[in-house]
Amino acid sequence: MKLYHGSKDAHLQVIEKRQAEAGEDVEVPADELLEAIYLTPDYGYALAMAARPDGLTNINTTDKTISFKNPEAFDPETEVYVYQVDVPEDETREIDELQTVIEGKDGIAPVEMFSHRAGDVEQYYEIITKTKEGENTQPEFKIR
Image (cartoon, rainbow, N blue to C red):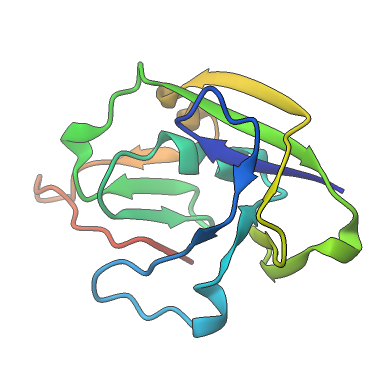
């Protein structure tokens, strides 16, 4: 099964498990806040995860938009990476259509790495930085 992981790190020899965290004022089911290796079957989503700046991010997969709490921190020229892994399907668990986890392993080695500029995320998502009134949006890290 081909899955992807987005990162700002150019030298990942192993994609390690991490403890997921919810953003401020975001309710996330406990079974989604795992200490696991987080992957996605969607290349554009992996790129969005790599491209996002520090701070809360809102990804709307229905409207194909992405917004950042700190849009001034988004640098479209930042180099980011999407790693591909091949893993047996019976070792994965789908959280939702965009999140798949591997539990019970400390890490998995990628089989391929793709280099991008953070601005390449606009091939998959429209970046929203202003509301209609011209104010910065205040997104939360959540997936709809």
